[in-house]
Length: 193
Image (cartoon, rainbow, N blue to C red):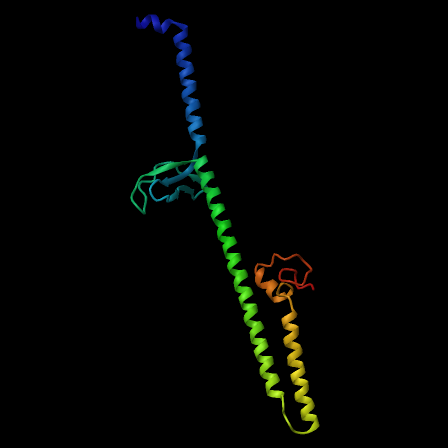
């Protein structure tokens, strides 16, 4: 009976088709997994294994199992392209949320700092006005003290009317990396004002 099957061309076709399917499955398995990337299912640790070729300076992935997780000693599993992409999207979303929260905290700190400066300026102006009020002496000394009081009052009013959004120092604090547009007099414009 075995001789009858081996002579049948349909059997040879099935064997060839099976071999082709096995080769295609191996090719698809290679495409599904990220080369050299392993993940622990328990603690989400990721291990990237690479071979460094000293002679040529090349780097290639190492796809042999990496043993156990260094955190929880669980097994490491291959990472699929989909898992890798999902993790990348999750990490990006987390970083954007953290950045937005940090920007909110920075804005609150800047606003509180501005208000603290405003209160300090008012208090200094009031102290100067109080110090200069009712000072006697020569006419020149009285004019000097009156001028100091007027200057303190003007400075206090000017600072109070100033919009913190227009202050260059606050703009620099909001944009410490200098991503402001060139030529606007802020950090990152090469000193052009």
